[in-house]
Length: 98
Ligand code: SF4
Image (cartoon, rainbow, N blue to C red; front, side):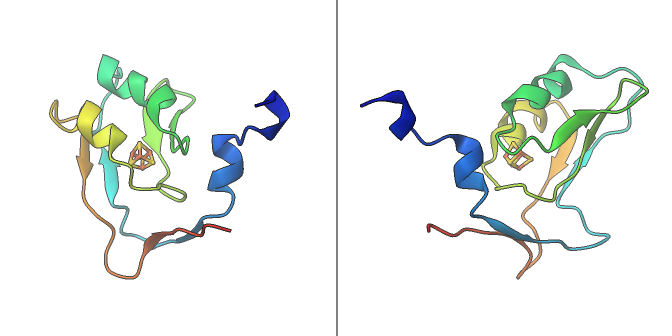
C-alpha cells in the first residue's frame, strides 16, 4: 500500500453532515479558570477537533461536527469536567459513507 492511497480522518469526516440543535448542546464543559489535565487532553483526543482553547486559556467546545464517538466522555466525564448526553432526536451527526 502506498501512502497516497491512505485515507485521512479529515477526508472521511468531510462526508458527514451535522444538524445543529441551536441552544441545546449535547456536550458541555464545566466552568473553570484553569483547565484540568483531562480537559487539556481533549484538545488532541477529539477526532472532530470540537475542543479549543479560548483567549483566556480555558477549554471550550463547539459541538457542531461531533461524531458522538464517546472519547471525551471516557476521558473527562468521570472527573466531572464535562457533561455528555446524546443529541435530541433528529439532531446531531448524520453519517454518509460515500
Ligand atoms: Fe469529539 Fe467524540 Fe467528544 Fe464528539 S464525542 S466531542 S467527536 S471526542
